[in-house]
Length: 303
Image (cartoon, rainbow, N blue to C red; front, top):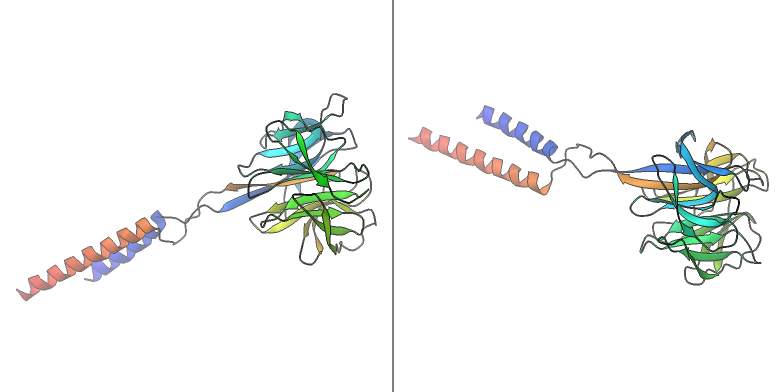
């Protein structure tokens, strides 16, 4: 009887490890560096704890100042052709090599401040960094690159212009003036002031958040904070609390960053003691078998 109980304990332990819990989502932080208005762009991965970067490779396009990934993990970026024409285009980026592939011209005049995918339907939104006299919100066709006007934001001559959807599909925008935290109306483009951002201490007035992206794994909105006016300014990784407006410095990183995006993938399943439905069925079967064996032994003894 004792040996049977030991067997059952080992069986339970074994079944719980035969049916591991589901894979844990993992997120990789990608950033883009370019120097100057016509600087060629390079893709890096960034350590979200230390800010240290690892080069992935040359993108092959200029001024890639906006980047995001869709639900499948495909990286998109708004850049300019590196042929002297400064034509704004939408591209995809190979996260393994950094190589960019053009989808097509956006038709937007000037640089795009940031892009972000809406979670509900995968629509890609773009914030026009050029003011005429107002900044404008667009959507981009991921098949052709073509932009469709949403509307004027009501903001004029603002720097920074980091933009992202959060987990609830609220579209957040950061402007240097103030500095302000706004939401953007997804049907009209109109910006609504939420709060004044509380920036890390010691930064110059020109400091601004030039890129933002929501990380669904930790639930935080991350950003690239440029410490100065120029494109080649020192850069920091930060998080933005939309409830309080507090911008928290995570770590300094390489200068001249102007885009970031989290790419979420399913990691290797962690083997932890957790019963799946199949494991539960087997466990019940083992206990029934043990009960039958025990009952049979009792009947034999009675005889």
